[in-house]
Image (cartoon, rainbow, N blue to C red):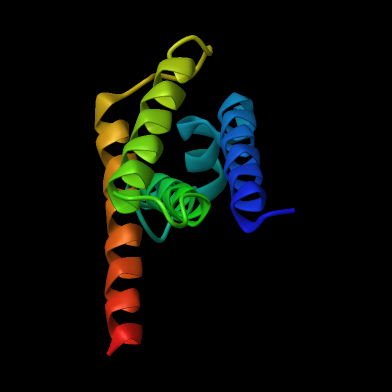
Length: 131
């Protein structure tokens, strides 16, 4: 199997994983906040930070998988970022149809930022390797 085929498969499986996680009631804001409830700190703030951190990480990793799948292509950073952002928008749209969920444009921006941050890190790493 070619490396690019492998990474496209990983990216698609990651998209499926995101879609499955989106449908799980355990991952709703109320469920995770209840899990974090503690008398020593404000669970709403911790919940918000954790949930947005998951957006950054999940879509950053998705962008990285797309970047690997696009090996040898021109504009691979831009395309990887665009694909991750587009899937973030599709995921938020999908969430708007699920009870107890909402599709937020702000989450698409967070998804896009996660993709951008990871790809920026990859770019810095590549430049460092080149010397």
